[in-house]
Amino acid sequence: MTGGQPVRIAVVFQPGAKARPVWFELNRRQHRIARTTYFWKDRIGDTPLLHFAVVTEDNVLYELVYNPEDQAWLLYPHIVE
View 1 (cartoon, helix red, strand yellow):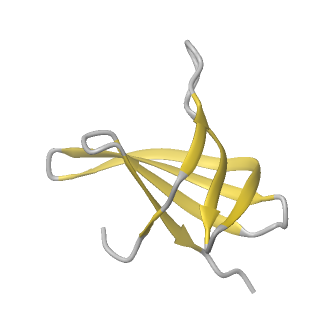
View 2 (cartoon, helix red, strand yellow):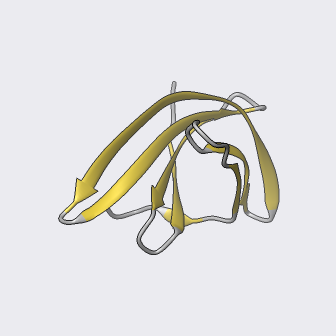
């Protein structure tokens, strides 16, 4: 998977629940997440990836991808017209 931008992110982990992204930083600005619209898992080779489709408070759709092996988060903006 290429083209994602590494981001700093805040995530809430609760027992018995999926991780919940709360905000991420993009261009030195914090973007609060209003809701997660979809969650899915896939893998590249042996590396598992967790995908979160999220909508920010300013109503912009993004895809956040978490790689648990290196604990990195990548951001993919989605332009919807």
